[in-house]
Length: 119
Image (cartoon, rainbow, N blue to C red; front, side, top):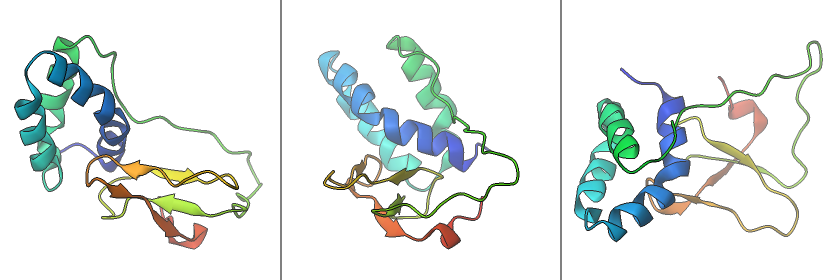
């Protein structure tokens, strides 16, 4: 079964996938896969294949290496995560920047604390 990282990667790629699918008359197909992705990570391979058909380069989780021995700092203006706790997507808001949307559930990311992040 695919992990939360793959769901997070597809969440970020959904606006592009939806635009391309709409231009090719396949928006309903994407909408159905997104609906299923909300509860079933098993559709990630189907999204991967659809992305390949549309020419979207590989979508997958990214990692950022921290500095050994240095704990992450507390974000100045908040840490935001998946509102449904479905994936590993997180985002640090810069002052004055609007909170981004969860493209899977179509609502803003939820504010959290660094302590809640247990990955």
